[in-house]
Image: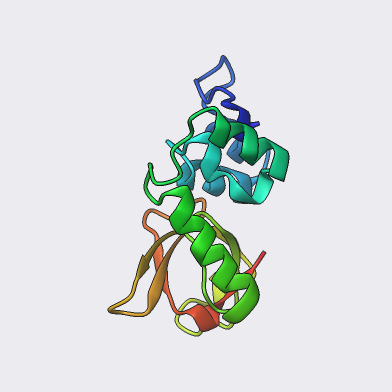
Length: 142
């Protein structure tokens, strides 16, 4: 629905993130936070070819947004084709083999940043105050 411009405005039940959390859908809540402000074209995992074509023909800008749809596409392609440890900002990942905080193993989060200098990804997990800085070896696509 987000790729069709569905509203994320608060309802009597709260914000979509609050509603997801209250129903136990922490992975969805984390994704909603990470994708807040995205344009419809940035929802690459959910777009069909026809929907992407319609958006582009309608004037959608593949280079707008942070990260842009074009940047997300490049990283998603590298993840699926050449480097299974690469994570795309906005991707849902599962945490694994974390020694410093074993209680986080098995939790699902959303990649919210990538830092090339530290070779770590910022992963937002619902219920955590800050994004966790994790190595690619501690992530797998969820």
